[in-house]
Length: 274
Image 1 (cartoon, one colour):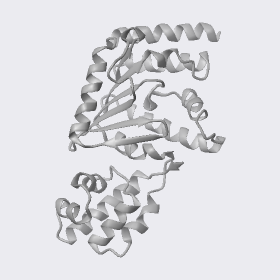
Image 2 (spheres, one colour):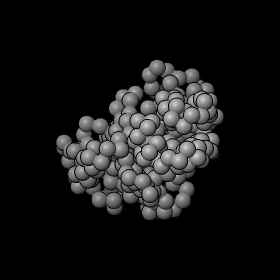
Image 3 (cartoon, helix red, strand yellow):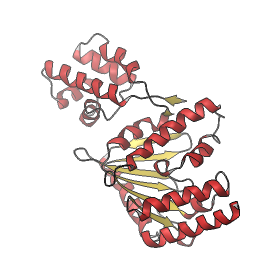
Image 4 (cartoon, one colour):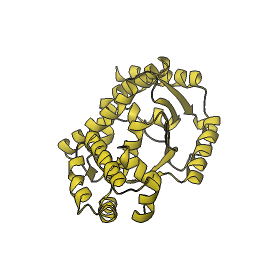
């Protein structure tokens, strides 16, 4: 299942919530207590960083006495296709000042080329038709545009060697994909570190994690498994994820050695493609 989202409408939603909260004489803390929602969650909605759920909208309508206004506003947020479990993380990703991602089996989404992403999105279950796949592909490629700016967000990518060796789409696709990562690394747009097979077991062996920091909000962690994912804001959980990432990073190759390895594997794929 896919959920769609329009950042512009989400910002308008947040502005409307802020205006009606202030008109009711409530602080974010006061609204959070009455609506049984965290203050941070309300702050994210007001800032346009998070899409409210149907339950959120109904709680807000009840507390603010807005007669279903925020529930009726929800359909206007439609815009981009994305896997439902990733929708919340996508909102955070677009606002982050620092992103650290880990790819255990696949190249992280924001680093994927079009050909690589098309192959990944076309191989899931249940099967997607071309139209469904292309909608998701469009969103994934749009995500990668956050790398168009040289310095923001700061991106670190920790990639398992298994990602380099798995021939997603065949040698030509892999050659292009790995050369893309090398180009980003050599241009200093990202830092990339490869966890080699020789490292053996490491702190992130059991799952996918992305860490995100913001200018004015607490950091969050996104943890993902098959067809499921969750954004964590609880400080203790986020801290544990950060520590696990740092431990795994300590077992990885340096940025320079990682680029050399990726470049070497890309050349091997290039020769095979010929």
